[in-house]
Image 1 (cartoon, protein in one colour):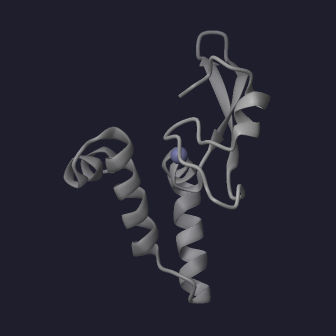
Image 2 (cartoon, protein in one colour):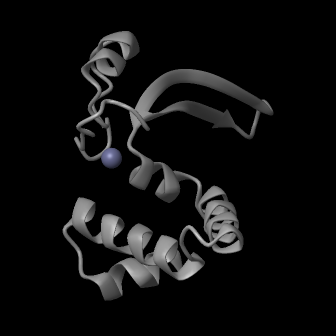
Length: 107
Ligand SMILES: [Zn+2]
């Protein structure tokens, strides 16, 4: 992730901080909060914001990906299987690993 420049500059670029993907329409990017957790002091500190593409946001929040998949399936606009396949393929592409390795990471 390119966190060496201010978050506002990175957001204006419209480029995903995690995989450098850009959407042609400049929309559908997600502002992701970056937190640091200190279990010893029981604190959570918001340290940065990152711009995430839709595909990478689903890797950051697999529970949200499931919710979207269920909703798409209920409305006939997609399926849970499609959402899962999309997440696995993106994880594979971003990390240069096989689809099988991506499956093992997500369990
Ligand atoms: Zn991305």
